[in-house]
Length: 192
Image (cartoon, rainbow, N blue to C red; front, side, top):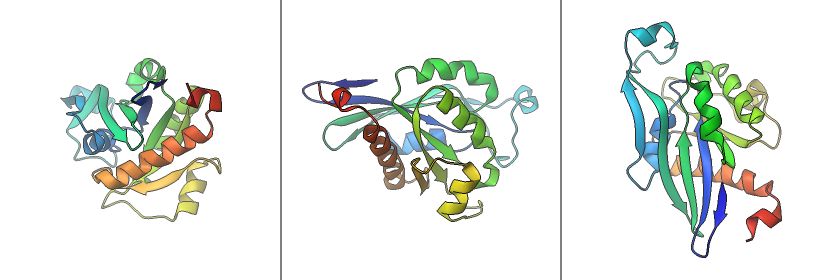
């Protein structure tokens, strides 16, 4: 979705990533309005389908979407749609992704391999994306080149480090995505 009026340009973006990577936290940190969350307490039944490796302390999970809004300078309004991270919610992704211009994929160095399926889904949807590695306190640190290689990223794909709890770092991650998307958007779509 890319709508431009006389006052604001509206852009729909996804915030995607594997289960427990910080999508809800990032949207909570960024949204200028009270964010919408569809978080529920995890149940014993979910223990059989949700892999808690690396996120043992997690007690809630998004069961549909997270939604937030952020206005950037120049009256660019970003509508942020957070996707659920579990495989069983994959059918929702197609509906959530409809009309999106791009995706910010969150990754966790403690379980980078979990990001591949998400990046595959984003690529299958034909969306441009940037990767933001959420810097958890107990996660190993790697330089950007090693991360880029481990994630098998295209040289043009932006890669940033951010703490999803930190608004400024999260804004910087979104700006890298928006810049990437706009750089690859035909000019006729940018000017009404």
